[in-house]
Length: 295
Image (cartoon, rainbow, N blue to C red; front, side, top):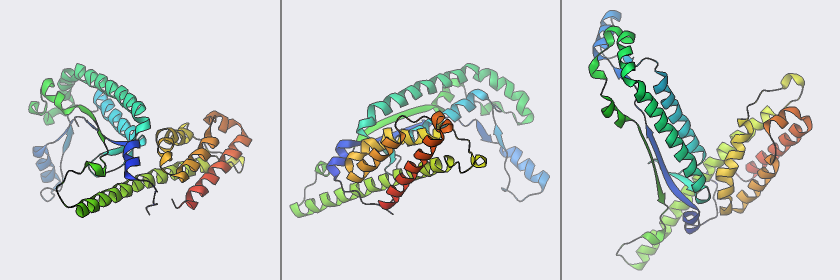
């Protein structure tokens, strides 16, 4: 349920912007219709119920590295932004713009390095594919390198959030006023949904911390990765702190979480029983605070 944030469209537009990130990678897969038909005949199936999709380069490690990298980059983009529209644009706090842009630019350079590495071995991989695929190999499935390069792309774009003052319409004052009010309500609603999404994700992270720090007895000791705490501190740095100026409740929660996780390392939590117990209690208090606020 949407938890209403008391803010205004001008404050949102001055403290946030929209960002769109897209990366594309060649799948390296293709359906073989002839092989699919042969499979249906051999297995005696109805038409169009089975299909053969080929890995054109087999398990090419260079291509797989790019695909995995792009997936991880997309996750990092999501972690540093909030959902905004169904068109792919996401909300980025202005305070984190430079850190986000630098981080994503570094990732872009690494992406291009991986793509260059792939094309260094592409021709040899195509030759090797003849052995891997046997009768499934068809040379027409392999575009020249200069053509295939268009399948790899990385794009980022930043757009300011428009305000109701951006309306340029020729109509009566009352109609224009009504449009501006509807516009502000729309942006407040979308901002509220973005904050709801952030808080729901935060609660998941905090509950995971609480569960992993629950050492009721030695048998209950749970192994946890460093991301147990870095997921929370990363959200604090990238989203909660920059967005907290929009609402007093967010400010109080941000201070509470900052006090809880400041200076705490995953190794210290593993080794110090008292610190672990105190941190779990503080995390549980934070979860209860979020629930009391309606999230």
